[in-house]
Amino acid sequence: MAKIIHHLFGNNKKQHLRVRSHLVSASPELVSIKPANEIKVEDVTEHAQVSRDTFFKCFRSVDDLLNVSAKQAGRELTSPIALMGSTILDVPMRMAAKTRMGIRLLTGTPLLGRLMLKSEWPFTDMQHKGYLDIKKDIAQGIEQGCFTEMPPEIAANLVMIALRGAIQEMLDSPQPQDYEDQVIYHMLLSLGINAETAEGISKIPLEQLPDLPKKGLVGKILKIVA
Image 1 (cartoon, rainbow, N blue to C red):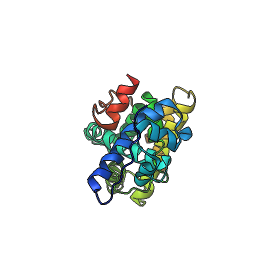
Image 2 (tube, rainbow, N blue to C red):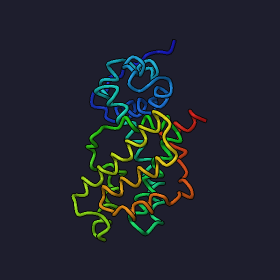
Image 3 (spheres, helix red, strand yellow):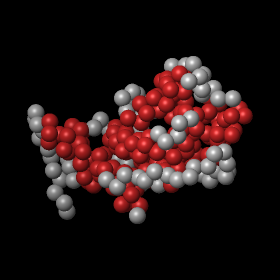
């Protein structure tokens, strides 16, 4: 049996961060083995080969661990989605395309999608890379008169609600063929786009998806599902 390690961090912040990163890195395997809501602290400590005390020095709970893991995966996904989206000059079309990319990537790799759904909600990390990217597009759309004048934080949450809801529904059960289009359509309506324009944009096909990162937490998930 593997040795269970008890870490005495003291003031050693580097060691604390190293063990914390080790626990985050172990989270994808755990989510692949059993439903996230069934994972216990004992599952984490046994898999990561650390003591219970060590775990609680790094995280408050399993949900806390999975939330941190989901946010890290989200940061890793933001750059390729934002890069591909940056080639679309029309803001509503860009928002629709990037939302569709997110839905496709996270439902196409269910393990990644289920981990991402463990991110804390309502979303409280206002400095998260993905959240800032959405706010940037929203602010530009409001400035150009494309979207209804509203606090960017509210508009960003409307986009996040649409994205999370679609991923949850599509992972839980089969959806109609046009379900993705309907999600995009209603998201655009919530931002102030008129129905005719929203319908037209929602039917624009997505030519290709960005490549998923081969390193980091997302890279580890891809190796697990390969």
